[in-house]
Length: 130
Image (cartoon, rainbow, N blue to C red):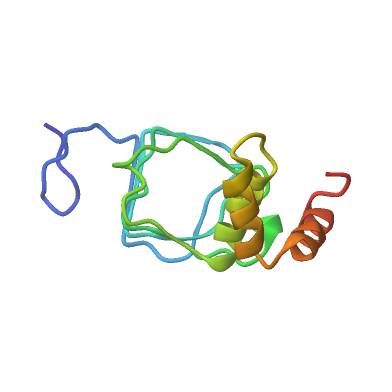
C-alpha cells in the first residue's frame, strides 16, 4: 500500500502528490492520478485532470482567463469538500444553463445568477457568439 508524505497509507498510487500547497498554478498539460489535497488552486487554464483527487482543495480563481480550457473528471470522493470561488461557481452554472432539457431548473439557475439580462451579459463577455 502506498504511503503519503505524512506517513498515512493510501489505497491509490498517485503520480504526483500535492498536500496543503498554496497558490497552485496548474500548467496546461494532462495530470493523471494526481493528488491535490487541501491545496489552493489559483490558475488552471488549459489543464486536464483525469482521475485526480481534489478533496478539501479550493479553486481561488477570479478571472475567467485563468480557467478557460480547464477539463476535469469528477466523482464524489475526489470532489469532496472542494471550495469554489464565486467566479468559478458562476461559470459552472453558466455551462449548465447552456444545455438542453431541465427547463425549470435552468430558469432557476438563471434567476440565481441575476436574471436573463445578467446571464446574457456574462455569456457575451466570456463566450462571444454563444
